Length: 161
Image 1 (cartoon, rainbow, N blue to C red):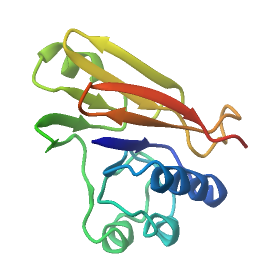
Image 2: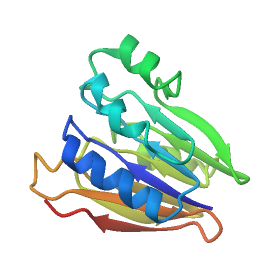
Image 3: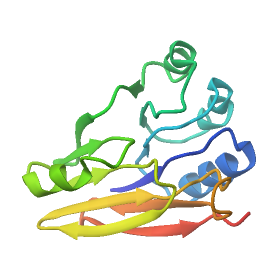
């Protein structure tokens, strides 16, 4: 299964639309958002995903009750641990304990956001993935990631601005 990973959308509806379109075109089986949606109205576009969705709250997500409602309960507090296709995944927003989680060996994949910089690397048998910033506000580059759960590999996709 291929999953789409997105983070730090920060209300950029144009870039969210591009990401959703790419995820749908690539036939991803699940999308993970690593926090900082921005406002709840971003779900006007996320609802167009043709697959299940899991997200976590980031440090800039203020209207959490409405985010929770519009996501139909699919946005969680961090860290959020779940399994897909037999792979154990932990998702968090801030980067402070990413290496410790990866070093623990308890997870197949550690997904995080917050830094706005793409990061795909291995720590032992664990794949660490930060898709970068989809919003493109901070560094002027808009990216997401595609993760292949069969091979536990990921690639960064540039959405363009």
